[in-house]
Image (cartoon, rainbow, N blue to C red):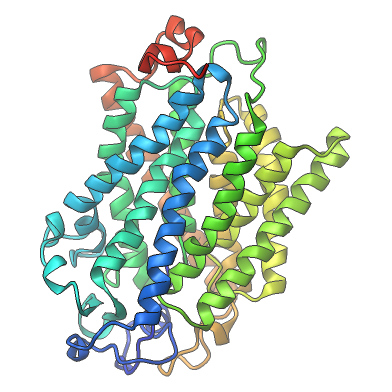
Length: 455
């Protein structure tokens, strides 16, 4: 979920892979070897990471809460907001108790260990920089681990919250709570370990994911797709009016997502520097390209450009640039955004109608499809000098070999998430059921699940 190493210098030249070398030397200066752990954190890097953390948290509350609730019917607005708000609290505790340890504990290639349960050892080192991993693969930071924990927590929050968009209007709140606990620990944390921990097998493979194309977007999109199929279609779909209650809320939410995404992507540089600046620039360019492409496609095919299409296009572009943000230049970022806008439009319209599943708010159509697009295009457009290190002077440039590594990482995430999500949802369905009754669904989740009305 990040290009993981802020300002590391002097890591041994015998790093295991070019990606390890890159991630170990992301920033351009500053002491960061394990023996320098007693040094004070870099205040500039720390300040930027604190700011980025707040921006990413804003993406879920209130950003995603407004974005999703504005696109459902009036009778489900409060329930939809509740999902994002409650997950922000629940996922925070899960992350503190065990999620962080499973994702960033040393462990092995597939999952972290339990050495950091309840953040053991983190609080004691609150005033010093920290090192992730050990030996040749160690990644050193110039920020305190408490800041890193909190930044990563915001990603662990938004990912299960994104999943709920595919299930809008029909999932039981109690089942969603249990799903969030199990999925965060058994699916999200292992994938995060694969991709972002130096011991992770995808990390060692050399596949690139700067800020969460696989860990966040493909992960959430695929989980949403599996759940949408298992839950079935909304009652009345195709015969009743399913128009959004208030697109103004959705626009406000999308705007907050757009602004918050600068923390998501530029914050994934791990500090304040040139890579963070480039990540911010390409994020803006790709988002703009996504808007233009989606609106243009809609204008040509449907005859009118819609507000819903514009905000969906922005999210599509932002999703696709996420894995590439620290590796590409502005023009490739525009290409990625344009392709994402067209891909998202196809995924949210033609694909789900052809396949017959009800992805209510296009969690898979936008996050899944555009996450895949962005991850694959990273392998084509990666710019070597952006990832150059003393150990790998040429950096990691786009190539057929890199594209295949990206494809392998995408396929592995897709399969693991699909199987894991299916098992979790099937178990919950057998024990307590997944879906509200038809009567509750027709009455609306605000009243039937929470005993409240919007007004």
